Image 1 (cartoon, one colour):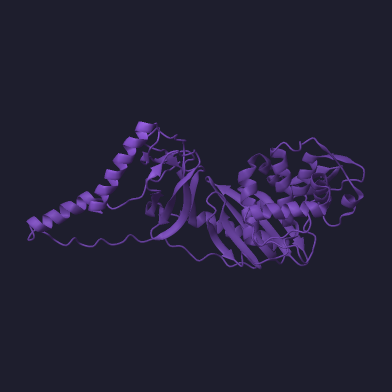
Image 2 (cartoon, rainbow, N blue to C red):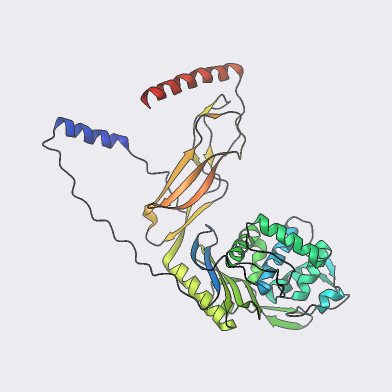
Length: 404
């Protein structure tokens, strides 16, 4: 893992030496010869696809590498089931349900049209089987059965879906059902689906292995995963296809190469083959021309600013998540980070409290910001410690005012 040092700030000592040389020996002072700027790596424009909307995102940093109409509200078809599956995975992780819980199959679930897992009325099917049916073979019947099991019906389950869409920042999404069957008020966007996919991958990695399975058999019926990239590209391991007349052919794909994971969303392609080919174009562009760097680890101490009136004089400051940045290849040396920490930190301070922010730049471009948090708690100091610090801080600020 590669780490980035703190901001490359102005170094005053060399500047003072230069100023001293100009005063003492003006004859010897010479203007330095300008050095040529090293050429940047050549990079083409992002590919233009035969589709209505698309986006390419890095799964770790969240940086968008290419997009077109990414916020347009479109019918998502069976890409809807990404949220259905996400909520099942969430309930499993919270131990609200178990993989071997038996789900009763209603007539409504059995009668639901479109793609099916082929469950039967009156069966009691394990949650794990239904989750496979939702993800691998896009079972509408399985989706309705899980919606009924988790929320008592498809309408209340859609309400839960919308609550989580809001929580995840999916601003151009509204769900009416758990399947993606057509409805005028049922829509999403390429950006929202990429964001949801990022959470599926990062929040519940233990369930993500399901998305790469090429076939699934239930009740003696074997069906293939409709994601053709699973057969063509060994780095692709998800996520979901979709199709209706209104939506066209859609595909959310994800691939990992050399510790870099990308997510592509293509909506409104003309055929199964087209959605696979256009998705492959996006992924190939991202892997060829970008790289994702691990800058800081979760919990790494990035600074130790002064704390006043506390049981300790210094606070350990860092980030609560690994920090990754996605940049064009061969431009790693242009990355700089600036730590902007709150002045005059005063105890008590709680672990996890926000005390500043980190700004990461690629040259002059801001490519990321992260909150800086207290990595420890510092209690208020005793009476004499607080009194001493008050006096010391007064004179420190006074002197600073004279020279500021």
